Image (cartoon, rainbow, N blue to C red):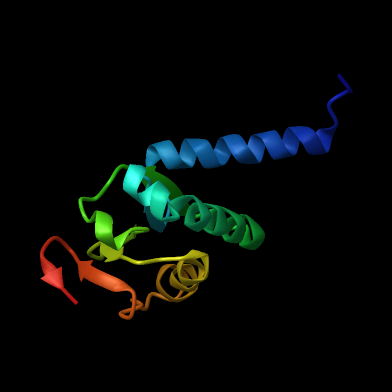
Length: 127
């Protein structure tokens, strides 16, 4: 095994900071990818990978990406839920990687719900 360089330590520190922030719930936005068996079968892994890549590419420190189990709407998978501070959560359905990146751009970063892919906002309000 080679010697650890200062830049390696910095990468480890940044990774740990993201993990701590995720556990503590810090951040302006949270994106939850529903990764139950149905979601995975429908393509949730590719959605998750696209979001991870885009968040890393943009070096977004205040956007948390996490997973959950099935949301109970198997026929509408892949799904994500976007939670912005002091706003009702929004469920997005029938996604692919391109739609997920568009949601990141327009809703998470721009504050505009992408109604075309949204199923519902809050607990019971249908869009």
